[in-house]
Image (spheres, rainbow, N blue to C red):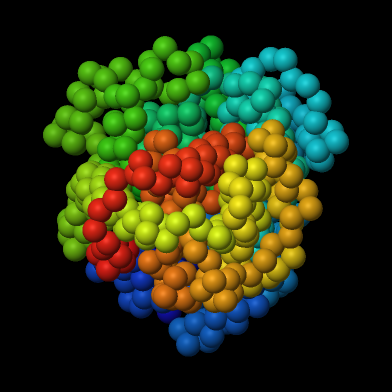
Length: 581
């Protein structure tokens, strides 16, 4: 008999693997990618390729096949993605029963922040002042900032992809309006008063509405500093009222399995409910190291056994080393006077690093019996710190080579005269390339201007945000419909202008003969840039900055075509430029 842990890339999955592995349990672990830290653990019996959650029928078929082969005692859903996958099964489905989940009604309340808030209100559990915004027409004016915006559902489908929407703290009405317009097409949004304080989590193991174990921890470091998962945390004695209210919520839901009830505690000691996390949590290591082994307890529930009585747990600290290194860098750069950033005194944080020497601190996933994984974890932490430098060197090299290629294209134009046809290219032909074409029509005379993209579907319209921003630049995208780029267009164009290196790679694979006449719009800009990012999924402020890059690039191109002799040209090296990719 074995256990299957899904979502092997998550911290909760890895901690669960090590907990059960130390207890001698055979554990299979599944992940969508082979690049999974948990696969380096000695406790893994079988490494499985987990299907993505976007196609539930495939996921369910794969899960049944694995269960038929191995007869799992317990299936652990370590992230909300796989939890939702199991939620889609009937409540009496054998696979779902093996996951030790509550019934649909309580699970749906826990997954929906507004339903959780309403339940808490009915039970007298403190919640921040809140109201639900369900559609764009319901957006009103807000005068007191900051405020917190919480998607009612943190997992939503956007453009055919299951995406996570994180809680946002906004400081102004402009930010608030923009965030709401981005989210409301996909989910209702709960607007709450901002509570400044420390995060406290109360974790539980339940069986059919009866509490078995509890544990409480406090966040010491949160990354990002604006509020997020804990990279450093400590176990604490349960505040009686907070623990009582957390139990009240789960007991009212007739809970079954594990859950964490999250609170914020302000400087006066007043606590406020944030949400219910109906699965294993990222800070699972602190409860295990303190003496409350939730994964083992969950397995005992799955087996029909009776876990030991409530453990008297130790007061310990645990650190997620890789994330906490990023926290240290962010804390060093942050403004300690900013009330919305959860900074800490730098000297105190450095002195805290001495706690392992006195046996008061452990690192997530560190296990003397699992040193292969520990070595891999330390290597990844080291490479994390070197990666920014390596990225800068790589970007500098790519930038230099594409500038040389750019000069070769300009050299061709100097030799052949003003181009009769220019085509602007991006992936979807609904954002960057149509804007560039409209602006170029205004600034470049005597030249045919076109735009197209690589997306297979034609006739798509530009997003509303692009139409609005383009209008401020004097460009009308309201009537634009996307076109698919053809080899004939490329071969008949005197100049092809792409937006990023991905466009160049697609162009090279489809029509390599056009590469000597193709360059990047950002290299005409000021400052120059190799790539102009795709704004399709960006917020409105970021989209505005990208559109400004497009405008400056078009102005630079128009200036060159007016005065080509003013541009210094160099040797043609398209081969070198191609190798840089």
